[in-house]
Image (cartoon, rainbow, N blue to C red):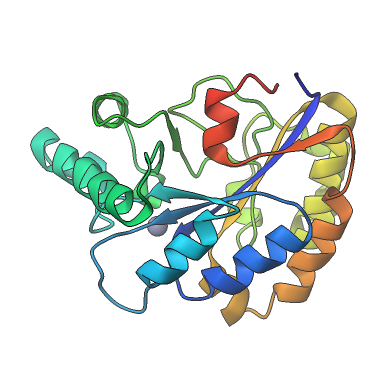
Length: 233
Ligand SMILES: [Zn+2]
């Protein structure tokens, strides 16, 4: 079955607050892909929590050490892509098909590495897209960030239809971008970091956005991986 409007979300880096975020998304029936950096450095999510989150959401790879893949040789790129995939597959006991480019840095060679490593899709950080063409250039619609909206005003979305003043208020902007996709068709893809929600006290704001986009019978709520492998659009 195909749907006119798809909602997907993705959350980067693998922070302990991902647990709270996963529960909030689940409460509203919204799926997320949690992209984990596997090198075990810093304040990161535990293996047990990764397994718990994977019961409802998807776990994707975000490389092993969160390095900029366009800045390293191809064999290092392959190592990073394969190692994180292997670690996550060992933890989860199932295939890890989704990948996210650290800092959104990719080129044709990196894309090729992601395909060769066995992934089925890769997310970028290019904003304001509402369509889905290339699974290895899965562009999101907006960043769940108080201050991140204004610096990235580009992409395929017709911003003038949304009203420029709304780009300064991410909740209003999120609702309006969803309304646009709901009316015209396409993919509404919210991405961010759980640490950012925590640091900027954005939990209630995210909940307001989730209330707005959730529970609609004619909308399909999927993970990034499900969007890439199933023909839902
Ligand atoms: Zn990252």
